[in-house]
Length: 383
Ligand SMILES: Nc1ncnc2c1ncn2[C@@H]1O[C@H](COP(=O)(O)OP(=O)(O)OP(=O)(O)O)[C@@H](O)[C@H]1O
Ligand SMILES: [Mg+2]
Image 1 (cartoon, rainbow, N blue to C red):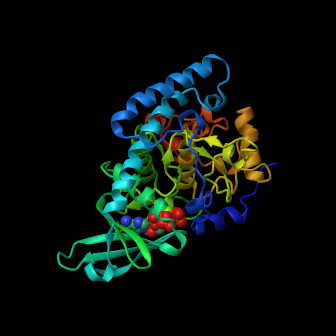
Image 2: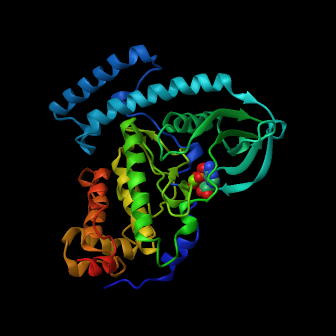
Image 3: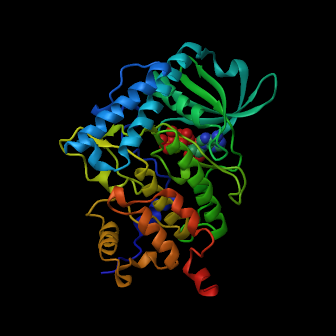
């Protein structure tokens, strides 16, 4: 039965998705057994990564691949994830020593609030002497572990050279009430502020977003990390036409291969392998396919102004209908609210949203669809 475009989808679109994919600040993330590293100094690291990767290959050959079953690329992912982890541990320790203790108002004027998330508040500040405008993300000490704050800051700093990732000023502070860091302010808000309910955004803008996001996510993955929080609230606009967008909020970013357990909160962007739960296993080793799923959901939202489903669980009838279509591939099974999309866009999303993570993506394939119509009405005009 074709699902009606029930109000909940529409309502979801209006309300920012603030449900965390797990209790972020208290999440227990344990590195995979295959690459549990002692604290390493960069000189030692390469040898250890190579050894671990050799051991992992050996386990695979012997037919006890456990962690490796998840993805054929995981051997590579594990070593780049290990490298990322070691680098972040070093950065974290150094940053902890150089954290600036001060009250915000001593050095900065607070101009206005730029936004608020589940964990932090972001304010526009100017430097008292220089007048430089900056965004300041403030995380209350009462609800934020220092280690988690430093992790988010160090990840953001390590990635901030990419043009589609928010630029950092390299200043982390600790006040009596907050931890905070300074970064580029986006004066055009975030992507959710321009998505029209039931309509989305113009196709050229959606393609510009997709192109920049592919580049940013590819960059993150090449650094051995998985972003894990693709959603319009985390994409900042530097103009109203999406010519310049930047990814922000690295609170969930983790090295590839990190074992993840879903603790609470399934949102439309949560990949089904996470929603299903990890049972008795120590967790799911994460990789780039989680970001591919979320990117697929985001592109759907940009093109339709709807979420494709509320939750990636069988009890969600929209998701259930999608699963039926994914499995049959028949045009007649295509869910009703997917019909505004062109056949090319449907094919692209079908691949990004493959139910089996190993069959998903890769994210880069989006680029090969950029010169084809994504909306059915555009395809009809320009067959
Ligand atoms: N540099 C910035 N310039 C302008 N607005 C920003 C900036 N950084 C963040 N914001 C706004 O503030 C909101 C909250 O920021 P952020 O996502 O970093 O917080 P969070 O608490 O980690 O969020 P979440 O609820 O997604 O976990 C963003 O959704 C965005 O609207
Ligand atoms: Mg956010």
